[in-house]
Structure formats: C-alpha cells, structure tokens
Length: 302
Image 1 (cartoon, rainbow, N blue to C red):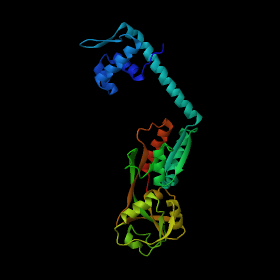
Image 2: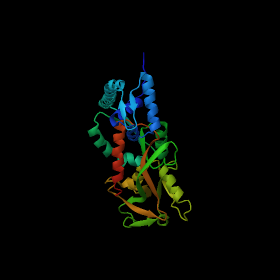
Image 3: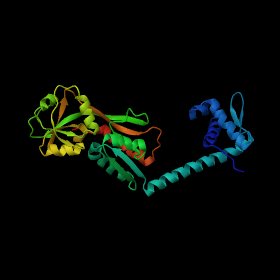
Image 4: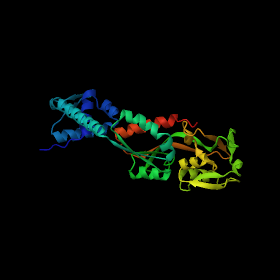
C-alpha cells in the first residue's frame, strides 16, 4: 500500500525530535506552532500511529517514533543526495543560461564577466539576448530569458528589479572637439552641433526625450542609430556628438573619444538585474547573475 508522505512533514518530525520542543522547531522552520502540529498530525495519520508524545515540559518520541526516526533521517539524506547528483550532472552536461541585456551591457560588461564565468563553469552554455530595454523586459516576462540586465522593469507587477548602479549620461565627442576640454556642457551648448541620437524605440531615447520635454532649446538630430554602439561609431567618424550613458565609456573601449558631463537637465538611469517574481533559477544561472551584480557595482564610468 502506498503511503503519501510530504517532505515538510518529515522535516517537521526530525526538527521536533532534535529540539524536543514544538516551539523551538517552529521557530527554526519559520512556521507557527499550530501549523507545525498539523504537519505532525498528517504524518501520524498517514503512518497510522503516534510518533510524538507531549508532556508539560518537553516532547519525547514514542516507541514507534524511535523506530521511525532513523528511516526518516535516511530518507531525507537520500533525497538531498539525489538532488545534488542531478544538479551536478546538469552542470557537467552543460547547463544553458539565457541572459537578456541592453547593448551597452552586452558590449562593455558581459564579455569580461563571461570570461570569468567560463573558467568556473567550463561546460555551461550561455545565450545572450542583446536588445533594447523593451525587448529585454519582454524576454524576462515571457520566460525566454532566465534574467535580464536593464534600466527598466521596476514598474512591472510581475518583475523584481534590483537596482545596482546609477549613472549619468555623458556627451560623447572626439578628443579634438571644441567642447572636449570642458568639465561639463549644457544642452544649450549643443544648439549648433550635429546631434546623433538613438532610435525613438530605444529606452535611452525615451529617457532623453522625457527629460528635455520642457527644455527651451534642443539640438537638431542629424543622424540616428538603433543602439548606442552605432551612435558611438558615428561620433568616432566625426559626424557629430551623442548623449550616451556612462557605461558606454566603461574601461578603455573608446580611447579616441571623450565623455563630458551633461547638465540642464542632467539625465540618469539606474541599471540593475530583473527577473520574474517567484522564479527559481538554476544554480548556474544564479552564479552568472551574482557575477554580473558584482561587475555592475564596480563598473567604472571612465
């Protein structure tokens, strides 16, 4: 005859047997004493005998409880061993982690993180979805990506947004540009400049447009690119200047360009990790997410 036992019931029994106290066991398991008592009642009903005997001062095992105890311990240990074995086998076969990230992260941060990640998990496979903020959010919400790195998602009911790094937008220009030696420039200074913008569907463009909605002067857009990388390439070619997030200058990726602080107004964004609420990530995915968290926190805007 099949006996239906729940893991939480077995764990409850083992903790009470260890502590000799319902109160101490309930505190360790973060449940109420009545809830713990119900678990034991279900367990005793399933087995068909009393396992615990309460007195005014302590809880003790019945003879049946003493007989059941080593079997319960062995069953839990066997289950934990099975879970570790399956997890290790998955890693050995090469777990697949799908991460969605905005292009600035894909270009300036993720490659170095993946290099470190691969040294720890040489058999793991990684799929990168490098798209705009809206597509990154959609990939995480739909479950296509395990998690994402972006600056949007905080307002979504089904998304956990962990803000890590706040950064201001800089004006990107060639080192020989007339404004390159300034410590800061205002948007009014750009009235005569050829301005290079990212597409209207970009999350970065939305941040800029929202901030400049009430500005008295706005630079004329002469060129437009889908992503920051394309805009930076146009700046490098001497076609104009562009407002880009600080992360675009992380490291020494653009030695021929200068990033100067922008004000009037200052525009900023908060970069962070996004994941579906309640999602359970594979240990390998959690490891990559931890590495990205650390890399974001220490990223140098240059």
